[in-house]
Amino acid sequence: MQVQQTPPSDATGRRGRHPILAVGTALIVLSALLFAYVFVVVPSKPSGRLLLAPMIGQIEPCVRQTALPPEHVIDPAFVACASDAGSAASVIDHTLSLLGPRISTNGRYELGYTLNVPLLKYLVLQDGQWALDQAAIDRTVRTIAQSDKRLVLYLFSNHFSAFAPIEPVLAADPSNIAQSSRGSIALGKHYGMDVYPWSIARTDNSLTKSRMKVIQAFMDAICAQPVSTRDHLAAITLLGEVHHMFPDFEAGMGFEGKYLVSDYSPASVTGFRAFLKSKFRDVSALNLALEGAPYASFEEVVPPSKDIRQETLKHFWEHIDSYAGGSFPVEGWLAPNPRLTGWVKIYLNGVPIARVKAGLGRQDVRDHLPQIGTADVGWRYDLDFHALPPGIYQVSASAEAKSGFPVLLGTKSISLIDKKQSTPPVLPIAGLPQQVLPKGELASFDHPRSEAFYFYNPLAALWHKYRAQQVVDYVQFMEQPLKNSCLGDVPRYIHQLFPYPNPSWDENKYAVDASLLDPGGLHLGVSLYGEATYGQSFFGWKQSKRPGIYGVTEFHPLRGMGSMELSDVFNRHRDNGAQFLSFFLEGRGPVNRPYAVTGPTVPFLGESNTQNGSDRLYRSVQQLMLLP
Image 1 (cartoon, helix red, strand yellow):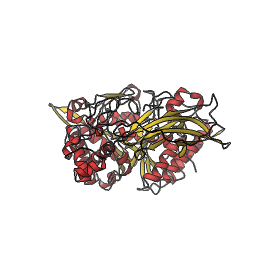
Image 2: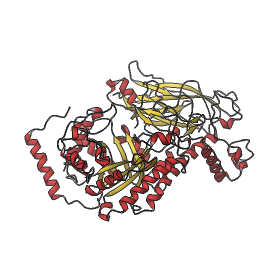
Image 3: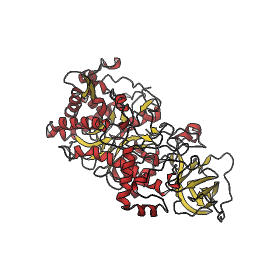
Image 4: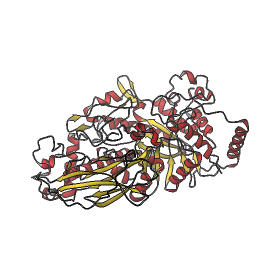
């Protein structure tokens, strides 16, 4: 989940039933649905169609055969799912039937579903041992068999709690918990949910073995099914948002504060040394690359872990902060303005170096200034300074005006300091735009901070590369059994967050860049929020960084859209290579009770969930399934 919680001038943080249709309209819709069901032939494999694969909520009692909640005890679909031979298929099929025909009238979309399988929840305590919940596994696999809809099988296990009984037991084992330079990271929260800082530095710990045990059980159970059932699987996504952790997860996504990231466990330190040795072979080559480091052997190298501004260092190569890798963000926000073009130009010492669009998501700005009417006002440019000489620089930003005369948003003085901490020279500055933003205009130049100073540590840059590789290695390890099973020909995807459209995030903390660019044999799978679902940030990144097919593992626009706009967004994803697109959808039976919203950020699409325009999005999906 990706939500920002910061005041608009200092963004440093992180993420009733609609009116009844007229009878005539209802009859038209019903006729169109019947026409689509009767006359559209459903192929076993789609041809250029985008699979709409919502993750359907409220199916927990169907899978675990727990007591039905009061609102479902008279609902035939839920009663059927609770029977001894039942599954979630009845709820899934009815929920999808409310959205529309299986194949859209224009043939562009197919309705399927994402089956969420929280791995650790399939382990139960029996006679003092953690054993597989075979009954729940069987009911889950029976869901795949009893519904003929194609699905994305989501083998889920990441840092968000699944409320599995084994989770606190695993968390008591230090080998399962990510470590910062100060020790094990504490359990966190995110909008009231427990966040476990699981380690990805090891694959021999009890956490990984538990995950793998359940994956193997599901492979065995699915492979025992006939081929016709296995063919229901359109894709498999793995784990979900695998990344490194840091303390204060809910508010620590930004650039400020003490820089504490994972993983500094003994296994990770040893792995970092092996990573350096494979890259440089000889420690003298490493020392040369680090511009004079003092290491006599690779065994002397420790990951950088101290901030030169606040702590005593044995030598410079111990330094790390959000900028030690060699870049810092130049970012802010610019509200829509009829006098401006929406583009921001960045200057270094008066010389233009970049031009960026103000269109990134800044939900924090919209929360504080609702009169703006949109959260898509952020802009950001990452200034790479690792090759710049030491000195005092001026970083400026201006808004382009339709009149042709740029409007200066501000200038910040920053210093680049060498490893000896010598006094930096003042560098010459060229002229800048003189026109300033009139009072009352809504804009902000947030970062860098005035008088900030930065140090480039090439060992920190190598540390970030190694941490990113750890993410790739862990997901690839978990993929191996699937690759070598009867499911080896089912396309496999990562299920990864996409941090770049969030201008106030420090993406190096997560270290997901390598997993997004080349996760081995896995296809790209990304969770997109806000502007990234419909704007340019994701499509621009993908065109330049990762062409080819992909899946949208979570699609959360965080605002309502009409059917034509939503159709344009879906088509754009399809045309850019998307194979499936998943969103959260409330599970419904024939009784069709109103959806009960359970929290302030629940993005489930449903008729009565007004949060983030979810009700409008629901109706738009219904409509676009019938568009000619």
